[in-house]
Image (cartoon, rainbow, N blue to C red; front, side):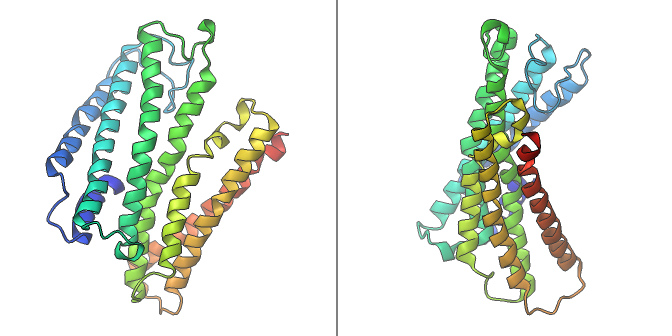
Length: 291
């Protein structure tokens, strides 16, 4: 919703344009969501449904269920829609902005959309390849993930979480941009505190999101050196996120806080985000208990 709906509404306003650069492509990406939704709903109405959870882990999916095909084709359509939308957002920002691409010329929300769109374009093909291998295993007797045919179910976990962790930042980065706009507006200041560092922090979060995927897989038998690497890389993400929290607090510093719903929302966001970051630091050290 944040990357799709709000971007289509706010991006042209912030770029002072009437529409995105490819409105028909935008329309096409929207209408792809309808058959994707219908396939997913049709799957839920069939008997003999699969019980794989939302991760579709093998070997739970190594059976020829019709519902599995509906789920995977639904995900493919959703992925195509997201890639088209991302291309449209990036093209609109660069072309409408007349190639005047400097840090201070773009708002933090536009920067968050740029980074999110790049993450989508890079991560969705990984998920598409993984679920395509599931289709081949299920319907064409391939053995990508089947140990009986010298396959490796752990390969699917690596592919899925290489997509799955950047997806977390795909969801939250537009929220960062929106909260930055809200706090800048409510503080009454010219711009948010340390805007350049906020941009670098979002870029760093996007890059680090691709090198920490195996912290979702600590219990599958990784060797201790690999576990230590992913533990350290996960904790490094706390640096750019703490920069963002500090900048938000400094933006609100010196302002008389009005008891409005917007201020309650923004302060609640900062508090919950801080608590979530602290629990992330604790969970990244879980390998100490495991070993």
